[in-house]
Length: 340
Ligand code: UFG
Image 1 (spheres, rainbow, N blue to C red):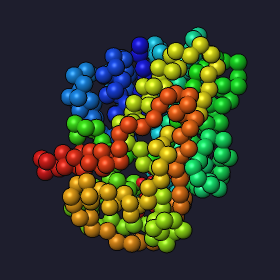
Image 2: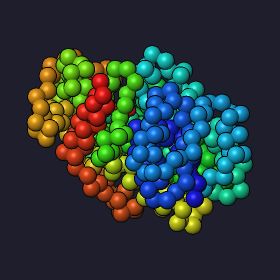
Image 3: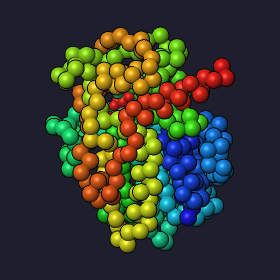
Image 4: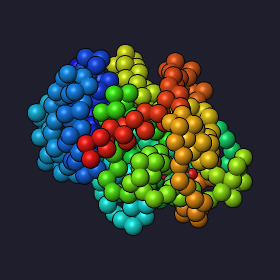
């Protein structure tokens, strides 16, 4: 089976690509390298002993997308490719709408030309819920007004997929609303590699611990939560990667040619920023230099998943721990800096 993995050199894409190769799938990785590094391809090879086909393509380019679908016959598509900085999206909303929505539209134009229903997995985000009224968040919660153009772009993509599902074109889709993925591959060869200043908590922690950043700023300690800091649902990247295999297998097996499901992807457990910092310090035996800073604009106070639906329908639950994620993230940072 040949699977198209867009954004396959990115954080979630690279970990999923490794597992796909290990499971015996042929994959075609498409990436425009806008927020990833070509060396990831070598590292996927080092881990799996297999060289995935790679195409450097900007998915906004309709002609390139059309050629891609002429050159290959895909049995499945996992669409990770997207810009993902909430902050940048506030400054450059157009970039987010044209890239995240435009790329999906180009792919869908090609899907509509296919004879057989394609197996399609879409990367969405818990950001579509905004600040939910209660916790944990289940899939039937209303989608709130997006806090950022990034969030808006994910909402628009979900709408586009719903429309396609309601049209008379057969199309099998699972949309995954990720909570907060963290950690790295156990080999330390691939992990989260933000270009420039990290925005997410764990890369900021590891870069501070190694001395690339002077200190971590905790964005607010006066929220109405157990210890005053924000609550998130941190999921181990290895669990997340495995889930994509589960979803792909489900889509391949299911006979309903209009199969359409949305799942929350988290652990079901809320962890505060302070709890995460303490755990990082404990499991890695490191002292982290951090200070309390101002609240970050656009942060929701709390977000963690109700995992009932995904557990029941896909028989999937997480198996890696938070401790493992924080150890592997640190191992990855150490590996990155070995030669410097
Ligand atoms: N945080 C800090 N200091 C930092 C970075 C983050 O205190 O330097 C805090 C944030 O305030 C937040 C928590 O750590 O409370 C997690 O922040 P992240 O930036 O790691 O993650 P977010 O939950 O803000 O964002 C993530 C994804 C987005 C997605 C969003 C949906 O990165 O792509 O979840 O809620 F849109």
